[in-house]
Image: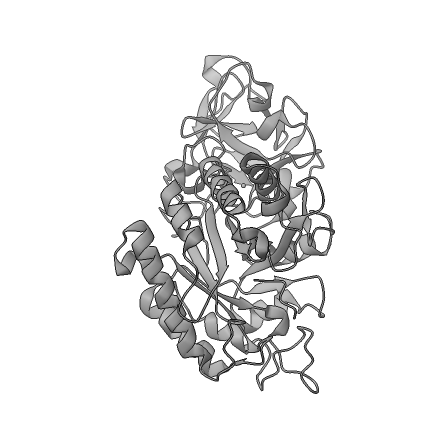
Length: 467
């Protein structure tokens, strides 16, 4: 590698109504909206009533307030007092569906339930489960009506929700279903592994997708060149979600061009982040801080202010920052700047490799560096040890590093035990593409680890961490 990593008609309805969303007061009804795709319920993500919260599909839970929807007499669909709305009044295929304050005159908040489809008045397009994703947490969009199962809805529970407890309950805090373990995966080179095989072999379902960069004029694309949607990266994400997992998308890396440097302002940078969040209905992002631009106070502050905007506009989103590190811990300048600005991210990760140490004690050095990070977080935020550890992240490298140090399988077990001991925020490594034994001599091209191992053994080791 030359490291590219461095970062959503029932009985209660008047019987004579063939169409819901008419104007008589008697038409207002409350109940569940059940997807024809998988029998899951439309759910207010985390129960948040913040503007911009994107509803999701989730296992139906009897009596859940987050899954009660009112089909109001003015044509609006309301959950927890907010209206189902199309972001930015979009009428395009893929327009993001979110919750917003209710306005009687806004056409993007008007819907008609007819023949099992929930049709948006402004666009004439249907409420659609993105990518036919059957996993908990799947997001919603509008799309041209096709009468497919991911556009079919049953109101009022005539499709009976499960009577047993769901296998997974949305957590009350933090991003829904966010997993601390998510190895980096890259489609740009190196014979990317089969993601279904990886999940079947290791049980790991979440992955960090790298990297989102500037393609010109502060416009995000994969590696700054591959289309944001529709290509191999989206195919990979669709596969991950179909397997019951999800992704963290990483912005940055070592090579650039970095959005954090080329976007002219914090608001422009936040808009670039938001474009990617909207495109994939993301629950988590990673800002991988590498390269000389991040050494400047201006770019550091721009990144901090952009992340503050993202957190304000996307309640519940998980945010990570990944930093380079010395064996004693990272430089504290960005941490201090974030703390001073009131930015609290979910995890500060450190890259525990390519740090000037070629010794064979990479597990112990990683622990030393992570403790150093914990101490810097304590100082900057005034946290206890326990609270600081909850915001520590580790981003290791599997096998032979760029400096010819070796992170062994035993080292990764040591790191994983440390993560479990302190319940850290994040545990990952660069990269899944390398998590296999070389067929011959070790090539320095990120196709294998350079150590003796079974396929995806590093992934399976960190998958044991239950953060």
